[in-house]
Image (cartoon, rainbow, N blue to C red; front, top):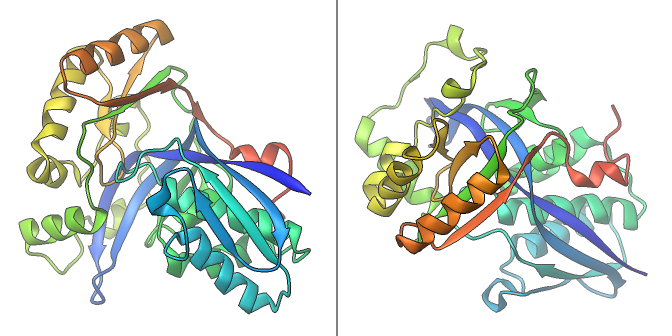
Length: 293
């Protein structure tokens, strides 16, 4: 049996670095929502784990999907394998979590196809060491996250009901490089936000746009700064997702967002765009009761 599953892009509604731990990991105060931009994973049972991608350089055993499935197969002592084909639509090095989303979708599918049926908490515990963004996809709902991103609860506020423009310049950004620049810029190894502020939810749209990594991303890639400035001429709600390089703007009408996307590409400020909506639930939940709640 061959089945196809969605792997949505995420956006950070806001992102604050709250602590740099002695092991170098960064603790966050952030919130995640999904979007209607999705990669597509086609899976079928096989003798071994095989991963192919529409972008050839992402095929094979270096893909996070391959690494996660091999480890899950060994942990669960499963004899079967899986053949996975990934149709990419989410750009790389954009702060949209494409690789992590692919891995989460593959893990959720394997959990059912191999009749393991581990619950959400078990999947999150297993997958967190493979990538800090994977848990937000396994959680299945818009969330507030602390720790390194694995401590989650439901996002308590309505999502902005506006057209969403995702866009990025030609060059991406390495997550590792952005965090390294942030660390070097602050020269800190201590709490950056007072502990009592960790549970503060930014409740209105302008505050949702805060991102502590934005300055570092703009320093490393000035095209991000130019794109954010260009977007700000057309929208009051503009910010960067994750460690970049994708930028976000909200508009009242989808047509307006589409026109701005076209204009930015004509001005050579952007070379990729997607116009759509934020979504509160992972699209896998529409078909499967993935989480036991």
